[in-house]
Image: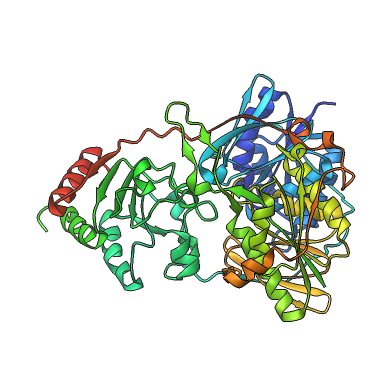
Length: 319
Length: 261
């Protein structure tokens, strides 16, 4: 029996990202590419999985994401992996996806790597890259077990269609009822911004001494047409800025063309989220701050002097 | 009630130096400590003890230096420390670490709540909680930022990206916490001095009935091909001194780069 690479994501967009990469990997590793759809979809949506290259699409209509707990998700993927002879499971590394990866790997006695940031085939090996040592390094790893579970960071791969003739199959599963009950689900308060796709991004950190001073930064970001991001301290500890703007290992990972870092020392937990920026500008009064090690341009100086001057200078000519 | 906080000893990540020529991290001689989120897990355990009455055990697998590291956990309020110290554990993958922890947990059973950080400070893989829960066949609730206990039921507020979920499960369960859940206390000096008088059990793999060949790097399902600092080709141009001049130079440079709107 030919082995399978199965992708699973809570969202269709996430599945298409994984299918796009999955096409390349399954060809190189000689595996058949399948996707799992949890919950109900209309026919058009299901057909779009074929457009992204799923040779087999498995429908699990009973489960509905949003009320799904990790144990149930792991049970579903475990059943599917057993029935279909899955060699590789690619799961989108959302919080649910990541916690499920560990659980389903344990069920399958599989090696597991979470938060992958790249996947490449070298020889007959699938090499998985992920950040290690708190973001100081990138570790390239191979899973030695036959079955492999990998959770992949969202938006690592760009979804591109490549239609195939595939089959769609409804799966009847006998999964025990969940032991974790969802009582309530509420949206976080925030403006639901998407700073991950911002062209320009300004991040502020503890160098800022009061919430009111954000006005000064906002003036600059308006001129630069930049989104505002921040370190964990400013959102989680001080609550000055909503959490959907938190950048770093437990927040957002951004790839702007221009990133301006203001009053941030540059601890690795934060800088992991800006490492992929094309151009990094740092403003910090401490010459030794680690942020300068990853900066293209830097001003060593007091942000309260530098930022207003910068705003003044960037004003379009003639205004 | 018995609450177990699993904590991982890691090197001080802020002090890692990268070799300029090879991009290799230098880990030798670095101080070891508990990760911040592991301390959040312990703090929550101690708060549960203070509110409901419980025994709090801190459980760690690690090097010989653990006997010093656990003192901080004991000073923070853990009643007892159990450590697994065995050179054969070196290089264990998450599956082997989870198996080792579970053997130790079974040795100190009965347990009601197993608390872990949402991810370790160094690798942040988030697998340990899930794997422990699966091996013990108990529920898992991850990314918890509020936790309450009533009778045998735990109610938790989970942080899942754009939403917060309120969920319930019966004990025993595994709960992983985020740094929002609490602010870990700093142990007062008197507690630090008293900590060394608290019970500290140290086990080897043999004590837990684990075959040394079944853990450690030889058994690891994960083979590390390379582990290097990412290649950074940054320009590293800095302006100091007169602010007007520095800002002027920066803006000129950014205009040249075409980075401004």
